[in-house]
Length: 336
View 1 (cartoon, rainbow, N blue to C red):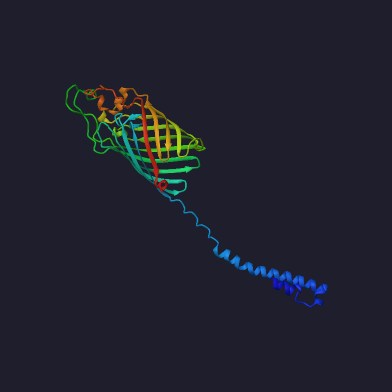
View 2 (tube, helix red, strand yellow):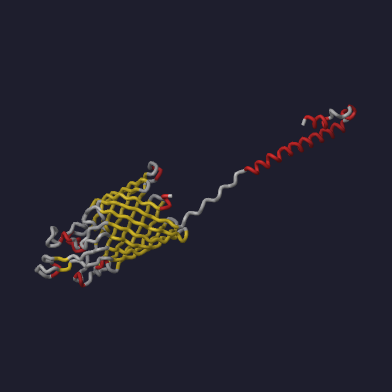
């Protein structure tokens, strides 16, 4: 650059040329142009290096999988099904496995299997729930429609060997107290509306044409409510909620095996609170019905209420109960 300035700035020109104003102006313009050309020439390699080593844009994130699996397990101090104990007021364990597939962002199909430990009159190994359905979603409204089959493997028919009022006899001839099979199925529909991720209100209906294989129809409807504590109020990974349910069971008349007996309708309710930590939930809940102990015996066939048992035509399976339940629920997507 110094040599260029000397050359075009006039140091190598004759004195008479340097004194001429026109020549000096021309030399100044020439110097400016030369300087610009030199700067441009030195900038090109640097620009090329920037282009050569510039990081490529990160690839787009993969689309979320349309397939997932939900799974979970629980232990409870009692298995209460719509107000009636299914474990003779004792502890119960359970688990489930539910594949899901989104055929559209707001439309999911699913099928699942669940298992629960029970203690019932026919003494089955467990209760196995087989179910499938669809879950459409429209903004804050979630729907769930499906069918559920209750399977009780290895049942044993219970016989009454003492005086049985329902047998119409005072002898000791064994009389069948239960059927050998109490499996049944029902269809269901559910709807839930969530306000601001805090309050959820729901309505549910279940219907079976042959409740517990008694020949009686069974329709259960309920309203539910849940208030979730805002996450901003809680420490990280910890949550809390309060929820309740009010339901009504409408039951029909049994078949001839049970003497064409009209079964009592009843009301059921529960209220409780829960604490969550990540995938774990501790739920503390109060359950009750408006059934008296004699009506409960008619509905359940509780062996403890047989004439030879301690209840003498009464059952405590439908009375008030406070139940603690610890569960874990997650999905494969959450585990990745």
